[in-house]
Each structure stands twice: as structure tokens, then as C-alpha cells.
Picture 1 (tube, helix red, strand yellow):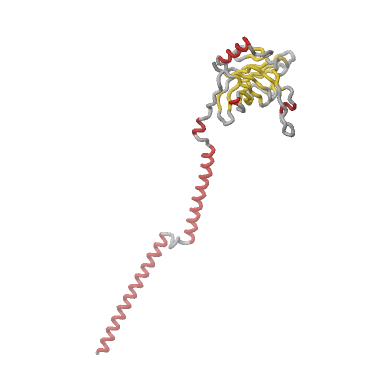
Picture 2 (cartoon, one colour):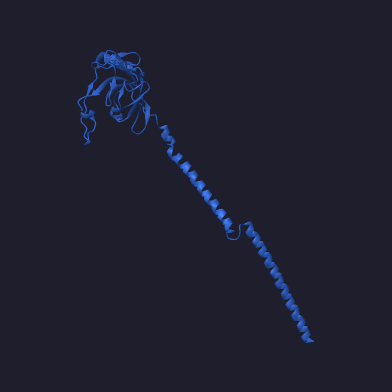
Length: 267
């Protein structure tokens, strides 16, 4: 009797254990299903499947490439544009009024090579505080007589001055005297060994200078005395029109290196 009771009890314990094992198996299976579902929704455990990881990697590379291209487009524009403070400091050069400047022509000008509207450029020799500045201008009249007995004319209007540091400003002046190089080998340029012959200049007496408002002066002699005072007063009154240079002959030419003594406009 006791043996039968023990056997029944053992069978009940084994059945309980079996039920517990089955329940644990069901729970394990349910957890596995949930974990699998989580992996599908989130691209799989630890980064998802290889295909998803590859797509994510491509997206990352594309974003980095787009960012790099954007930088390449933005940075040059930022670096090329001068600061606002630098732009606002331009156009501040003011040439003193009624002051003599000596300018040296940097390229030839003549009736045989130029036409109305052509630009010309000079370097400032004096005064010292403006030395090496560049003066730009335009030819407002170019007329070749074509005859030995005729009169050829060139009108030169000065427009602006640019300092070596880039600062610019208006420059209005009238030509008072013209000088051409004389007595310098190779026109004062450096030779093959880098030596530069001293330049000497002589006044170009045959050139007539008619000022912009119709006031004429013959630069056949020294501008001095009453005539010089009249020219200074006329220019000092603010005449900014181009002065006309004229000379008898079929053509009028000014070689590079020609120097013009000019007086700035002003009172």
C-alpha cells in the first residue's frame, strides 16, 4: 500500500515537473518570437542585417559627401569677399587741391595708335607722399592732321588715383608742362646686366596746351610770371575738363617715359 502511494506521488511530481518544463519552453519560444520581431523592426540585433548596414553606410557616406561639397562652395565665397570694413575704406584718397604732380607715362600714346576713349596710365613721381601711385585717365580727343603743316591733337582727362596699398580716389588735373626723355641710353631702361642709365629730361616746347574751358597757353617757354599765375588761377577755380595737347605735324606722339607736370583742381 505504501509502495503504491509512493508511486502515485512520484508520478504527480514528475507530471508537475513536465508541466513546468513545457511552460518554460512556451515562455522561451514567446521571448524568442518577440526578440525576432524587435530585430526586424530595428534592423536586426547589433546593427541589423548586412543589407541594412550597407544601406545605412551608404546614407552616411552620401551625407558626408554633401557636407563636403557645401563647404567647398561656401568657403571660397567667404574668403574671396573682402571684409565690409575693407570695402568701406576704399575711395578715400584725396589729392591736395591746386598742387603740382609729376606723372610719368607708362605706355606710348599717339594719334597713330590710339583713338578717342582709349585709357592711359601714369605713375606718380612727385610729390613724395604719392610716389608710385597710379593715375588712370582716358583720351577724350585724338586727331591726326595727316599733313606736315597741319595740327595734331590729343586731349587727356585724368580720372582716378590708386595708392600702392590699393586705396583709390578721384584725380582731376590739368597738364601744365610736358617733358620728354633726352640723353639716356635705351630710354633709361635696365640693360642686360641690370644697370639703368640716368635719365635726363627736356621740356617739349613745341607742344601747345589748351585748357579745358577754352583758356589756352603756349608751352613754348617757361610757365612763369603773369602767364603762370593765370594758368594756376584758371585750374584752381576747379576746371576739370580735359586739356588738349597739340603740335604741328601729321601725328602727335608721346613715348612711354614722357613726364607731365599737372596741377590738381581746386581753389
